[in-house]
Image (cartoon, rainbow, N blue to C red; front, side):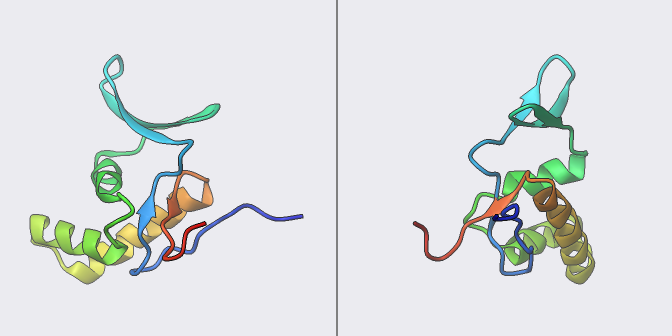
Length: 103
């Protein structure tokens, strides 16, 4: 029996929302939400900004570089926070990654 397809997020990971999940702005509630079958998650503003950069092309390192430059913050601190946040989303099934060899 196979377990869940969890990923281990690292600086080299290229995360992306899985096909079944969509990041969408909810006009009624005026918040961003991740919609997945039978589940809705309302990430905070920082998580939304990170998720908008998770396009499967950028690595976690690239995302951290971009955020560190934007906020003039230490890259190492941003990288650590981004990895923890993305790993939490991955563990909940709201994130997957692009692998070099796709089937």
